[in-house]
Length: 74
Image 1 (cartoon, rainbow, N blue to C red):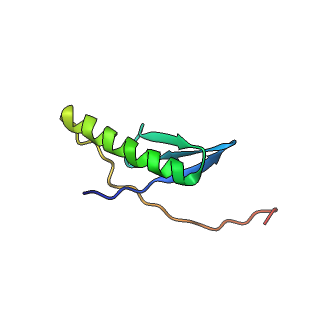
Image 2: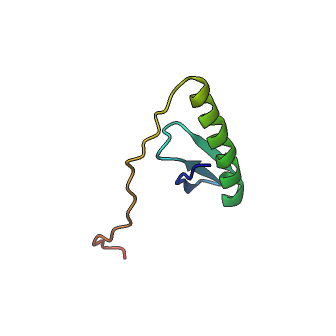
Image 3: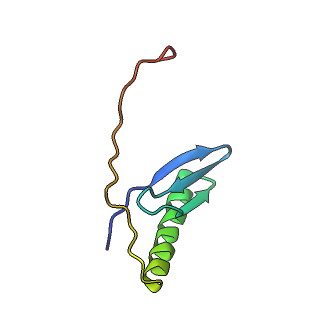
């Protein structure tokens, strides 16, 4: 079992999700919970396809940080 970071964003009236470590692996859902569940399925399918194709191109050098910057609105 592997662990991946996913990002879930509101996209209009639904939610979209992606995994920075696996470019091209995306999912959507009408709720955050649905987007997460769909992303889990997308990750499994994506990894299975990569394995079948003999690929191992998972970007493991991703760094995520939340930083503060001055702004006029908050």
